[in-house]
Picture 1: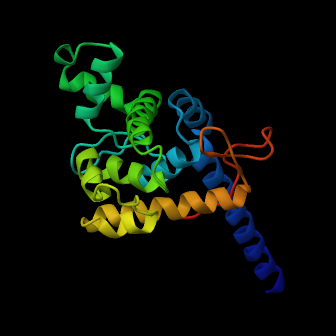
Picture 2 (picture 1 turned 180 degrees about the vertical axis):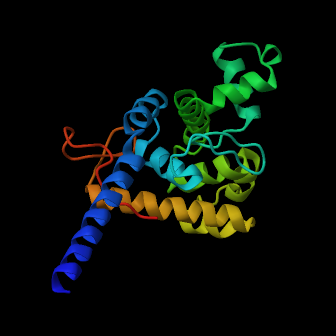
Length: 216
């Protein structure tokens, strides 16, 4: 009986280690892609990683209820805007099927998602806690984010928490809060320092850019 219990416990430990190892592989196997595209568009890779974690848990095949596609749940409308701006193909020449295929490609999806995120990053570059504004714009659209961020002429800009309190769409407020919580914990775990772009980088540049615990 004792030998049987030891065997069962050993199998459980091995299974737990295996599951943890697979989970770590799963949440990090797009790290290089995220780092490359985030650098291209000068957005924080940890923020992008946190968005992908929230949106799809790194499942590139996922489709949202409103037609969002792929890792960063990019909409076909945004993909056509990106294609038109970058000159990849004229929007009117890209069929719906082409756009879906484009967005199912993880590399293109993350590229387009970072391109879109950069727009709000630039828009709110002088705002305190701009990540909250960026996430609100990413989830609910730039016009709604601008409405929530608006203050009277001469007034002080909203703090991060004041901005979040103004979000009157419950799902967007929960989205922003959840991603910010994970993002801040990633930063705290890495013990990063501020860089010239206003984002936090690892102290040891040779360390894995996404080496941290999993929070779900």
